[in-house]
Length: 94
Image 1 (spheres, rainbow, N blue to C red):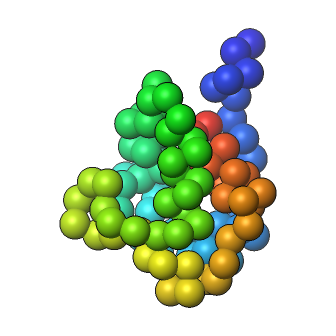
Image 2: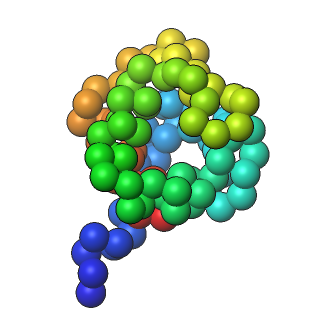
């Protein structure tokens, strides 16, 4: 089995705390791309996980579409590097 593509369990508490589902869904675009679309777009991009972790921690301009990633205070508060890593590992396993 290829562990690089192994499904990671959803970090439900973090997803809820950060209000991820306000804009994203698992498999269909909503206000922002689905988690599956994000994984498909960045799966083979070098250093994508690190870039996405920074995006989660700091918010910022939109990477696709017109909706920027909200700043942490707008979506549940500060996010540690460890928690950002957990979320991105889960998203990228979609």
